[in-house]
Length: 324
Image (cartoon, rainbow, N blue to C red; front, top):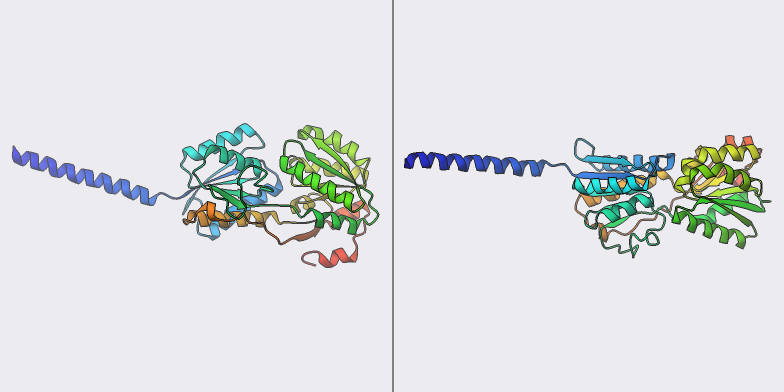
């Protein structure tokens, strides 16, 4: 009988050891998980997403090989943002990345422990995400897409020296857009240009509001506004009918029919976001990483749009255009 008990005891030890080894192996083999949350689909945010994923891959974090990527797109729905953020937490994500301010805010509401990397948040302090740009503390840091408003409005004057009135259109749902628009209006007034402000509460408002605005101004300035970006082709169509140029702050909007911008490259914003996420995955503390503000500006013009509107681009602008 003692022999039987000894055999059973040995078997239990062996089985238990095997289970322990298997479980330990599965823990060690678990790939790091990254939750990537995008507010809505439009070319600017899509470029940020691509840059983020490319940078992670360059740093050795490739989906399905050395990392598990959980990507979710809320398509502009706040309820989706909350649900998707909570899903990342349930999946025990090692790092969460938010593309655009509302996405990061949803992630912040879902967790105060999991590191969160901001992708393209204009004013993280005003958005209630962090208190100190140099020393964020907590579980959030990342990349800001703070807009060079003065330089962009100076560009408009360089292209349109006789401009008197510039329209500003933004979504009331985005506090960052409101703040940018107020800053733009203030600077316009300081250089002798009259700002004419119009707002929308949904993309359904854009056609009517833009049609009315474009009858009152010489040009339109558009900040980093996701609602406007989602319906930007509609704004371009209306502007083309009235032969008025649009000056967006985002490079992808120039490609869609804006006239020119002096601004940040959206892909590069995403690339820097991915680089920071990789640092966190390697063990750096997110709260010790300062918020980054990319300073390199690209001057981009849409020659076809200038020709369509009958606008002559001065030689001084051509000389500064990237690639010319």
